[in-house]
Every structure is written in C-alpha cells, then in structure tokens.
Image (cartoon, rainbow, N blue to C red; front, side, top):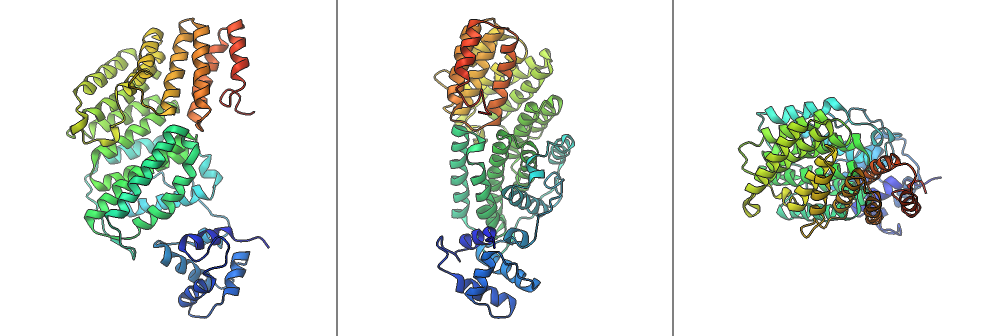
Length: 458
C-alpha cells in the first residue's frame, strides 16, 4: 500500500509527526477523536499514513479539522489526500473579485494547485481579456474594504515582519538564480505561513499591513512564475496580488503590479495591452508623488511601443522616463519597491527600446552604461543587458565582438534557471542565423554548445 505523503507533510507542519514518524501519533489520534466524537488510537493514524482513506465522512472531516486547528487555517480533503484528483476550474484566479475574501480564497486555491502540480494550471496561457478587466477594475474602484480577521491565530507585527524578511530572501535568490530556482519553496511558504496569517485574527490596522506584505510576496511569486515560463499561472498571481493591494489603499503598490503585468504582456507579444497596462499604472497614481514610479511606468510603455515599431510615441515615452527619473529623490520616494531602479536599470530599459527600434549604436551605448559602475548586481539583470549589447553589435555588423559578448552572457546564464533568459538567447540565435556561415560564427557555436542556455536539451 502506498503511503499518504500529503497527510504526512501536513502532520509534520502541524507538529504531529517527526521525520522518523515516531512522535505525536497518539496526540493526533486524540485530536481527531475529539472532533469526531469517538476514540481513535495511533494504529488508526498509521493506517491513514499508510494510504488507507477512512470510509466515514465524519472521520475524514475530523482529520482536516484537527490539522486546521494546529495550522491556524482551513484544510480540505484534497489537501490531505482524501479527495481524489483535484478538480480545478480553468478560470481559477482570473477574476478580479468584488469581495477581497473571495480573492484570498482564489489565491489560496492557486497556491495549493501549484504545489499539487495541476498540469492544466501550469500550462495554461495568459488570458488577454483578464488584463483589461483587472486594470480597469483597479483604476475606477471606489471600494473601501473592511479588513478584519476573525480566525483563531492572533496576528501581530512580528508575523508581518517575518513575511517581509522571507520575501526579501526569496527576492535576492530570484535575482541571482532566476525564477525557476526557489519558486516552489516560495509558494510553499505562501500556502502554509502566509495563508495561515490571512486566516488569522487581526485588527484593521494590522490587517492592512498584512495584506500589503502578502500582496508583495504574491507579486514576487508572480514574477518568479513568469520568469519560469508559467505565464497563465503568473498572470493569475498578478491579478490576485493586485486585488490584495487594492484593499490596502496603497495605489503605488497596485500600480507596481500593473507595471509588472505590462512587462509580461510585452514579453508575450501583446504590445498594445502592455502599453495600456503601463498607462493605467500611471493614471492611477497621478497624485502619488513618486517620480521613480512614473519613470518606470513610462519605461514599460516605451518597451511596448518599441516592439510595435511606433518610433515617435516610444521616443516620447523614453523622454518622459528620463525626465521623471531626473526629478526623483530616492531618499523621499514612497515607492520603496522601485528603489532598485537606478541609472543602470534605466540605461538597460533604453537599451532594449533602441535595439527594438533598430538604433543599434544607441542600443550598445545604453547597454554598456547599464553594465558599468552602477550595475544592479543582479545576475539576471546583467545577463539581459549583456545579451542586448550582443544583439546591438550583431546589428552593427560586428559579428566577432557580438559573439564574444554573447559568450560572456552565456557564462553568466549558467547560474540562472529562467525561461526569459532562453528567450533572449533565442533572439540572438535568430539574428546570428541571418549572417550565414563564417569562421567567427562557427567558433562561437562550438563554444556556446558547451553552455546550458545554448543547448538546453543537452
């Protein structure tokens, strides 16, 4: 009989089971019995862990109640391994809920389905209409959500600081190793720790802080999922993060999520939608007073317009991005999540835009600036800028220099688990194919073939 690993994992989280399986079985049996109104022994628990599913619905319900009591959140029978194959709605997480608690329920369902490796969710493409619905709902909302937690677990400022610190740790891992590196560990943290806090007891003041940190942690999960190539799932995380952010009243946080949605839409080739998402972010924060945020919103709009080939409008957006960037005062900027947006990051954005507009000399100038003394220090950002520089030199006919730089980028990319990195390599490969055969290209391909990003199947 196969063991029930889902039940065992939840019992470990709840403190009922040690790794050697030797502690807590009797305690768990008593807890289940209390909820079921009958007596169980540790022998029953061993049978459940061994894979036996209790026939009695009351017993199954008591098991989930005993686990939920310890974990401080609701536990359903699918999560315990008693419910058979989990049926997931194809629209789970796509809707921008009127009620924030409906949004939290959808988000919790997404986290669990993600951990369960529900294939339909992991492979679903982005839904174009959902971007428009979410951005418009956020932009015109007049709601003021009443936030109060009525669960058993008391939530305080220390719990919120724990979310913030843990999110920061995963953010650093993401930048250094790519979204595919620790994404699942972050989702596990969200599904267990953060979900338990959201279902806890808290005042309105604490609740808004909690929702703000939960929104930022979910936003990071969306970014990592996007970077890992899970686009439909990432879109759903973005939407639910936006709904949580709305409930806090923090418009800049919500706008930063729209800004991230714009980035994904551009990557997926939905350039008009991407430009509109960046504009919505800007329109929704006209009185927020953050030049750093505005500069980034204009930069995202410019990225989309460059891909469309709209030179005049892209130039306008780039000029606005530079203007707002020069106005910023990082010390007084309330948009602390744009703190990373320094001279290097702006130069990288301008490099992307000029490359896509066919201005290869300008693109190489900006990409070189991005990799200069003010470089972000994030491995993935350096990889992107280096690949843009290689593209630019290739477009200038400098094949030997371009290949040398691309090899540098491929070496940087050895540390990264990122589908986006693969897309940049694909663009360079396409440019390189237009050159035909040459000694420089042959030498490059031979060396590049030793790297994971150039030959991912190997």
